[in-house]
Amino acid sequence: MGLARTLAVTLTGLAGHLVDVEAHSAHGLPGFTLVGLPDTAVRESRERVRAALSTCGVTWGEHRLTVNLSPADLPKTGTGFDLALALAVLGARGQLPERAIAHLARTVYIGELGLDGSIHPVRGILPAVRAAADAGVTEVVVAAGAGREAALVPGVDVTAVSHIGELLERYGGKLPGRARELMRRAGSEAARASRPAAGHKPAREPDLADVVGQVQARHALEVAAAGGHHLLLVGPPGAGKTMLAERLPSILPPLNPDDAVTVTSIHSLAGTLNADAGLLTRPPLRAPHHTATRAAVIGGGSGSPRPGDVSLAHRGVLFLDEAPEFPAGVLDCLRQPLESGVVTIDRVGGRATYPAAFQLVLAANPCPCGRASGRGLECTCTSLQRRRYFSRLSGPLLDRVDIQVEVAAVTAEDLTVGAGGEPSAVVAARVAEARERAALRLADTPWQLMGEVPGGWLRSPASGTDPALLAPLMTALDRGDLTLRGVDRVLRLAWTLADLGARPAPTRTDIGAALALRTRGARP
Image (cartoon, rainbow, N blue to C red; front, side, top):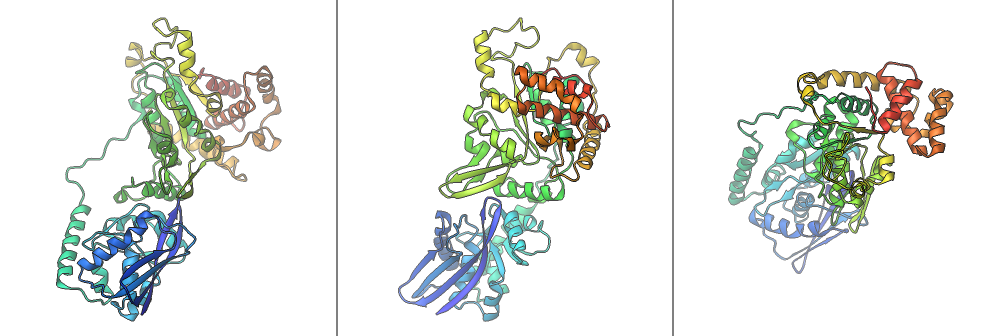
């Protein structure tokens, strides 16, 4: 009879929980029982572990194995338990020396086993290793393909292995000759997979200098970047709405260290992280197609909830091109994360909360045919068709979008006079200065950007807003031209305009310019 213990990590959203993997071996009818709320992937690990160890020459004999995943009331998900299970089983069966069994109990193992004993990386390595470090664990073993990602967490001694035979040799276990050949082959395959692709050239970063003309829209983009405001671009096809939206991240400041770790962890969990590039320091851009489902945009899926585009765009930009073509259910689901900055997903497999503090950029044509801009003489749509088309963007959603501007069609004059606009680097410098002024003013508050400040504080004397500036906004509120949320959004924009202009407080001119930005009449 034997008992051994290893450590693993299970993830609930981005939150990681340390799991004790306890294996007990006793003589009796052969069996392998796994308890502790495992999901289907974890239950199937019994067969992967049995096959992998048998391939490496481990004979099972008449042993009854019981493995408990503690805490037993916490759901366990994913295939990352395989390696911890295999080593706990080996320790319980007495095939590792006592000193190695003691070492197993203080080391976290994360990896999926192949039937030949090879170890494969799994999703969510970065948040899992981060959770282990927060729990005080200093030694972590991962698959060779996940070594670079795990090493991004400071204060942890990471060991990357490609075959379970490497651990057997390290811990003093017996390794048959066949297992050595499989180990050598797995190491060669891991080495080939880690080589960079030959001839790969990094893609050129989008730059605002590529945009022809569009002075008003460029100004709106700069204001949106300076204050973290949401943006709606309305204009005919080919006017440059998509180009402008794709270049918004290029004028945003780099992510701070905490946000960089969070954003990288989300992409690791989603399986979209390139660990060779290190932490993600640039604001991400997500641009789902208008046929994307609610689960793809918001997050979800069967079993354990997965992050969607709203979370993958955390601290970056979520761009919805052809926004009226998105299902109404998807658009309305954006309203809650736009206010709270987080999204909570409930599924049968559990509840997960992901960060979702993104900048929303919507792009839309003025009508189904797209030719209703300007005087609209070439438009073939009826007034009813126009109303139906744009009414797909609900009033409550548009009320949360601070800036709404018209993007005019490009003219021949723009191609000559308007060519060669300011590059992203120049605009980004102004944006960074405006954000520094806002952060200095908001130093004693929980907020850093004007787009995050609640309206109650903006209307209070603590904000420094001149009460005389509120009079025209209150008049617009009484007329029904603005909602109370709209009043607050105009005040936010006015403060951002003041920060861009290096003014200590907004003026009446800033209020007028903010109203114009709010009502598709932006002027630089």
